[in-house]
Length: 144
Ligand code: HEC
Image 1: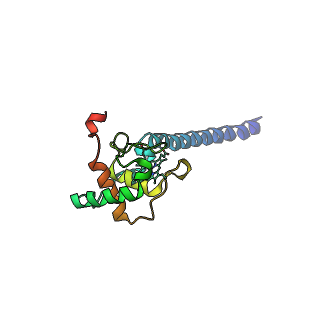
Image 2: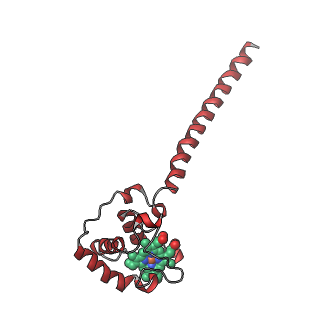
């Protein structure tokens, strides 16, 4: 029976090691992804939140205002209050979003719910729209 015992032990050992590797993988894999989902505006990645807006002057806001009227107002309203399925842009969660997160979302859009992608607009114009949005509406503190 000595030989029999020797054959069984290594197998049990390997099973435990495999189980431990599996459990570690599950824990490492699940924890960050569930944290990322509750993080930024519309699940924006951290890299989006870190982007800095290079166009923040008053003239950038004025340019953004024109671009908004041309491209966004027909759905979100000339007063930013939203029309139908297009939400208001002058309050939370937009007011609480970081500039880079707004830039990211505007670039990507969400076609399946009716928000076009604006990747075709030059980067500068997308940032100018972000600058305009941030210059409008309720202050962050008041919406919370
Ligand atoms: C054809 C209609 C349409 C146009 C044009 C449009 N949007 Fe939207 N937008 C939507 C809809 C519908 C949603 C909601 C999508 C969703 O919730 O998934 C949305 C969502 C958004 C959001 C997210 C708001 C939130 O509360 O989560 C932002 C920001 C936004 N749009 C900005 C813009 C900007 C800036 C422009 C112009 C460059 C623009 N949109 C043009 C329809 C439009």
